[in-house]
Length: 81
Image 1: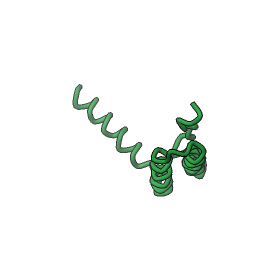
Image 2: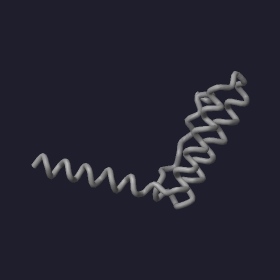
Image 3: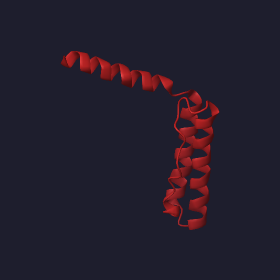
C-alpha cells in the first residue's frame, strides 16, 4: 500500500513538472531578476514599478497558454500591502 501511494505521488510530481513550458521558465527567471532588483532598491517608487513589471511578465506567461501550465499570478508586491 505504501509503495502504491509513493508511486502515485511520484507520478503526480512528474506530471506537474512536465507541464511547465520553456516560456514559463524564461518568464519566471526574468521576473525573479526584476524582483531581486526591486528588493535591492531603496527607492519605493522604483520597487513598486519593478514588482509590477515582474507580475506582468508572470501573468503574460500564464495567459500565453490559457493558464494550462501556470495559474494566473496574483499581485505579490510587498509595496502594496
